Image (cartoon, rainbow, N blue to C red; front, side, top):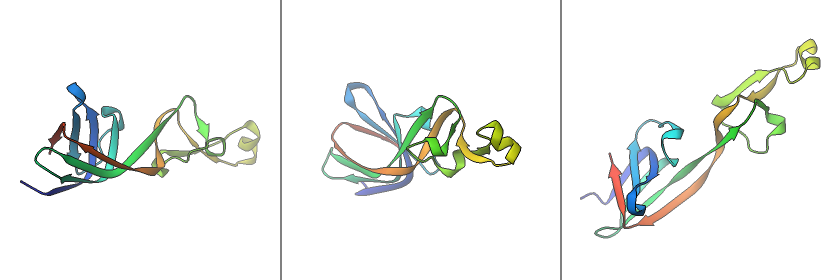
Length: 124
C-alpha cells in the first residue's frame, strides 16, 4: 500500500456515518458538486486505518446581483471578473469597471486544510 498519494485537486464530501469521501482529480472539479474543493492535495497513510488529508481549501462566495469589485470585501479569482459600466455617468465617460456576475464565484485566496480521520473513502 502507498505511504502517500498526491493529486492536483480533490473534491471533499461527507458520506453516511460521518465518513470523509475524497475524490481525487487532475483537473479542477465543479465547485457545486462537493462540500468543498482542495488543491495541491496530499494524502498520508499514518497507520492501518488513519489518513491525513492536507491541501489548500478553495473558498467560494455567492453574489446575489452583479457586484463591482470596489464594493466587495473578498477579491474573486481573475476568471470570474468581467468589465462593465457601474453607472450612467460611467457609460457616457466610457469608463468600464471590474465586476462579478450574479452567482457562485471562486475567491482569489485559499486557506490551509488538514484533517486526520479513521473513517474515510478515497476515489482515484
